[in-house]
Amino acid sequence: MKQGDLVVRNSYGGDVLFRVEEMRSDQALLKGTDYRLLADAPIPDLSVVRDPEATSARQQVKIKVNDSLKRMRQEKAHLTVLSSPDRAALQQQSQSYFELPGKVLHLDGDGNYLRKSMQLYQTMKVPAHGVHAHESQMAQLLYRLLPQVKPDIVVITGHDGVLKNREGEDLYSLSSYKNSQHFVNAVRVARQYEKNMDGLVVVAGACQSHFEALLQSGSNFASSPGRILIHALDPVYIAIKASYTSVRESINLSDVIHGTISGIDGVGGIETMGRHRMGLPKPKKVTHSTASMKITS
Image (cartoon, rainbow, N blue to C red; front, side, top):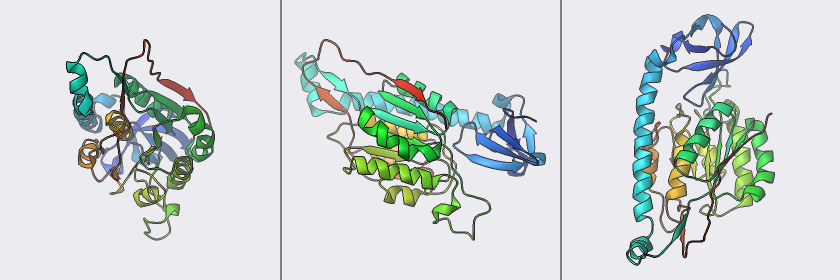
């Protein structure tokens, strides 16, 4: 077994596929390949996976991902048609209008997840700026990036998890989590930049993150109410939903939460207005760039 190998944990029944991030004497540091989970495990408890596509863990995830992507495309088409009461009238009048989906600033503690996220933003035609940075750097980075990028939506995510060797069983203490405190710090910076909850939509958290603390610090949407694993693309799904919901309408909480792969135990949130706008007349040239930038820790 070596760094970079794909493995499963035998004691958990091989329920999650991991990549070995680091070898430490008798233990290995693991990162989920599909779920935003950071974990460590005794090396004897790990089995190397030679064909990841043949594992039940990957097959189940693929089914959920395909269902979520199908739903995402359907909802985007629905929102594009119905997001504004003016649209039908403009189409009937043959008016040349244009659309401005909300711009996303996505901070991710995992470079592989960031690349997948940026590909999905591009596929769904959502303008997005991606930054790969360690979770501990995110608050500091936001001080500089927010006024530069001027996003409508901020995604703050990466890896997290409940510490196994925490004091007692206090799930409501930030010290019981690997990275929730860093996410909370970043959310506070975002909310200092824009206090209006509808002016800047904040999506924060990863697997098993401290849901209540993230909401209290100013997130519109956060993980994880049930302290469960969330899929890598769940925060992206919410950001896309916010990007294509009209500024005149509230994002449908039930639809957006149940539309994620993880569901209501994985993600929760509060009433929030969308960030999509229409304009008239259409300029000769309108561009929406999708950029990815890597910042190492």
